[in-house]
Every structure is written in C-alpha cells, then in structure tokens.
Length: 40
Image (cartoon, rainbow, N blue to C red; front, top):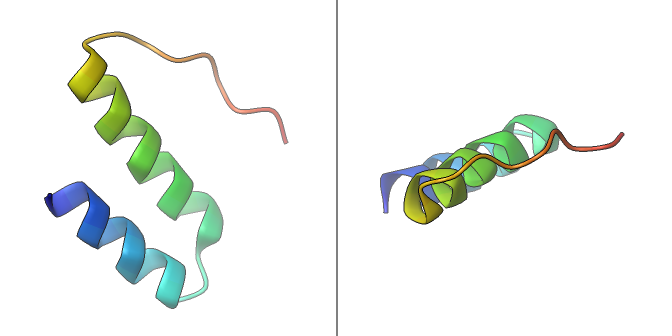
C-alpha cells in the first residue's frame, strides 16, 4: 500500500506526526468513514 510506505518514509525521516496522519487517512479510506481528530 502506498500510504503505508509513505508513512514508513516519513517515520524514518523523523516526522512521526505526519506518518500517523498518513496512516489515519489510509484507515479512513479503507473504512469509508471519518475518524475524530487525534488528541495531542
């Protein structure tokens, strides 16, 4: 899956927050729904 690979690259580059957002987007797409925003 492209989103998973992108998340892995972002994580490797030290951008954990953006990697999490990419994975959330991928899950939303698969589930066909919206997730609530993450709590920091």
